[in-house]
Length: 179
Image 1 (cartoon, rainbow, N blue to C red):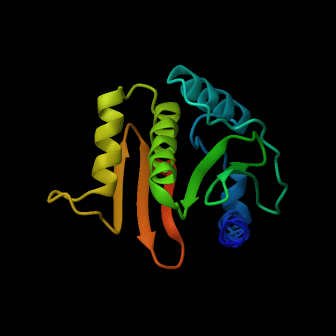
Image 2 (image 1 turned 120 degrees about the vertical axis):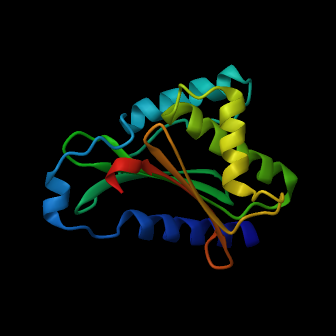
């Protein structure tokens, strides 16, 4: 029952995040975004997961039409969700959001693996060590304590990590120049 409630909560929260209104003039200006469409993202994400022999995948992406931007949502589990926002004109991804309320160590590891996979897809020039360092620097401060909020930029991509009691663990990925 708790998992079902969390999935409904995550679904509503993801919908709220992708429905945030922006000005019409802002939408008319085509943005570079993350440099790929949702389908390209899905294919690269799945290829990465297959390359490390992990069964997690995004089997399909169904676009949701909204007034300003279109979006997609995917749930890796009842406690971990992904949302992508794209511009209507060319379907290019503007941002990715991962929300999680992981239960147990397996889901915590899955969440970190999802972060690493997303980083590998949007910043393919970063090697495994650089991706690991990025995830660590987002989540931990210099003393090794878990951070409540952190922002890092690598190769024009902005990564943001947040933890709070209301929304759980949040991971945002956007183009650094457009935010």
